[in-house]
Length: 604
Image (cartoon, rainbow, N blue to C red; front, top):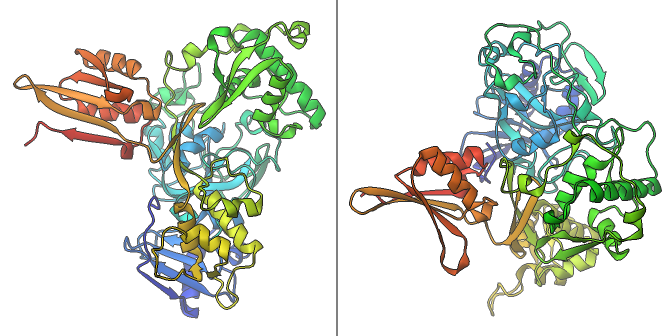
C-alpha cells in the first residue's frame, strides 16, 4: 500500500470534536486496549493533523512526531496503527509470529504473510474472522514489523489446509510510510536494513529459534514465553489439527480433511541451538571463533570449494562447527566484525583472506602446515550435520528463492566533506535511510536548523557546496535555506547509486540500477515462435541451470548463445512461452515482477 511515494493532496489540523470522534473510533476498533494504551496512542491536549492522499488514504499524525494511524479507505472504518504506534503499544493488536527472522525478509520486501511462514502453537490458533487487523512479529522481538488484515477466517484456513495468504499486509517496516518521517528510526537492535531478528537486549541470540510455544497473540490473558512477552486468548476455542499432519509434521504438505489436534515436531537443526547459561567474555568468544574455524577447515572446507566468499564460510561452515548449546556472535568478540577477524587470521598465516573492490572478500588459501592447524584435533561429528559442498550450494542443487535487491549509495566527491566532518566511512555503501541520517547528524552538529521554523535548514558553506556545487549554472545565486525533506532527497541524489543483489548467502554489488530480465517472443521461419531470455546474471541466476529446467518443463529444444561484448548468455526456447517463463522466474527464483520485462513481437 505504501510501496511508492505519493504526494499529499490535502492536509488540515484536526479540531477538538474530530479528535474526540477519532478516539471513540479507536476505542471501538481496538476494544481490548486499555485507557492508558489509548492515551499513549492519542495523548490528550496535543495538536494533530490529517493528510489526505489521492488514493483516498487518510494519515493521522501528532504534530512534530511520527504518523500514528492510517485509514485505508477514508471512511473511518478500516483504521490501522502504524509500526511507530505499535512500537509504543506492542500489544494493541493480536499478532502472528513468524517461524524465524529470515521469513521477515519477505514481509519487508512487500509480500503478504503466508500460512507456511507462521509458527503454529501446540494449542492451535485462536479463532479469528476475515478482515480483522493483526500485526506480525519475529520470535524474540516484541516490536511488530507489519500490520494488515486477515485474508480469511480460521475456519476457512483449516479447510484450505493452512495454505495461501494469512494476512494482507497494509504497512510494514521500511516501506514509504515508515520512511516518510524526517528521522525514521528502529525500536531495537534486532532491526536491520532488510531483515529483523530477535532483540539481543531482551534475549541472547539464538534462543527464540528453539521455542515453538506461541505464534499468535490475543487479548484476555498473558504469558511470558521464552521469546519474550506474548499474549494469547486462553478462552478461545482451540482447533484440533492432528489429522492434517504426516509423520514429519509438515503442515504445508497435507490438505485438511478432518479437524484434529496440531502437534508440531521439534526441530533439530545445527543452526537452532540452545543458549548458554552465562554470557561469554570477549576473550572466550575469540577462542571459540578460532576453535570453530579450525574445526571447519579440518572437516567441511575443501580445496575444491576455494575461493570461498566470507559470508558462506561463516554461515555454511563456521556456525555449524560451534559446540552444541553455544551461541556464536561475532559482535561479542574483540574484533566486532567478521572481516577484521579473518584478516587477523590471514596476517597470522593460517589462511589467505583477500578483499576485492565492489566484491565480497574471499577465502583463497588454507595453510594446512600452519602450527595452529596441525596441532588442532577436530571433533567427530554426525554425518547428517556436515555441510554440503559448494557444488550443491551454488549452481548444482536446489535454487535459493530468497532474492533481495537493495538500492545502496556510495559517497561521491561532492559530499565527502560532510562524511569527513562526522568521521563517517567514505568507502562503504549506505542505504537511503543511513545517508539521510548522515546529513541530519551534520545539521544537528552544526546547529543549522532555523530557530523560527524547525522544518527549514540554514545552509552553511560545506553543506551548500555538497548539495548544489556544479548543479547551478553561472548567474543564479546559491540558495541559503532548504526544507529538511528536500535536503534529504538532494543529499541522496548527490551520491553514487549502486544496487546489491543477494540470493541466499551470495551477494553482489553493481553500479547503477538493476537491469531487468528481458523475455521476448518473436516469429522465425514462417509461423514458428521462439522465446529469448536474457539478463539472468544480474539476479544471480545460472543460465545453464535454468535452460536445463526449462527444457525438462516444456520438453522442447533449447539453445544458448553468448551476447555481444561478453554481457552474459541468452537462452532461446522453442515456442511462445514467455508468460510461463516469467511465472517460473517469479515463483522458483524469486525475481520481483518489476524486474521482468515481457515483449511479444508476434502481435501486430
